[in-house]
Amino acid sequence: MATRYVAGSLVAFLVTLSTLPSAVGQTPFRAPEGPTPRTSSGKVDFSGVWQKPYVPDMTKDGPGQKGSADLPFTPWGAAEWKAYDPAQGDYTGACLPFGLTRSFNTPEPMQILQSDTYVAFLFEQNSWFTVVPIDGRRHRDGVPTWFGDSAGHWEGDTLVIDTINFNGKTRLDTVGHPHSDQLHVVHRLSRPDRGHISYEVVIDDPKTFTKPWNNTRTFTLRPDWEMMEYSCEENNKSLWEGRIKVPKFAN
Image (cartoon, rainbow, N blue to C red; front, side, top):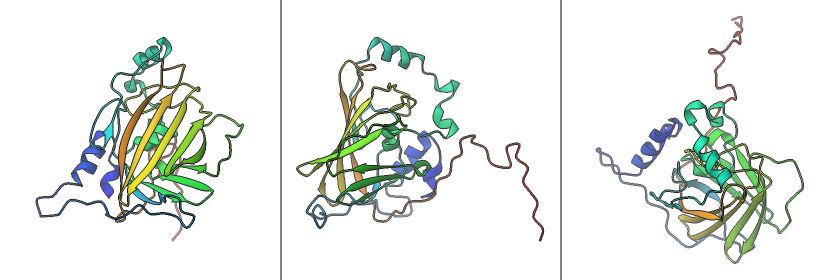
């Protein structure tokens, strides 16, 4: 599990490698089998620790995901995409919040906690989380945020999470596809069996794209995993690297 802390594409390689047989005879992980779990109220239960495919580029197809190929940029969106240069610095390098879609795209585990009123997504990446009411309430009026304001509801056995009110300061994925503060995200989650979640995200942002587009992927239940602490500070320096003087303590 320590390999989850290696940065960038190496993380994706190591996570993928961890699912393959090794030279010393380890068998690949197999998702738990069985029927779809349900809560005491009869709703599909998404609780558990989940392995997400690493999605650095939401337009590409890859293991466990299907992208949307070329994106339908508006002139503003195309200019934002063309101007983005990660070599000049990316906000994630300063440990600022990844935002909603980019947090779902990381290869680090995600834990889901669920009640009849709320569902919480706990991301191991930087220990971020988002809590979503699922009792039918409407969006709140508030200050725009990094993760937006989410409200969930059920459509049969599918959990639909509608999110608006973003601050526009994040990117959709690692390669830097842009969005604006008009971003509207819809997540749809279903659980066809015990071991998997079928996930779809729809991106609707009229300032950046001429029409909505989507990405679909599969999450795998990992009962053998537990969430681990993840620390990343905004100035991205340890006490020993910065100008902070480390005090000496008496014996």
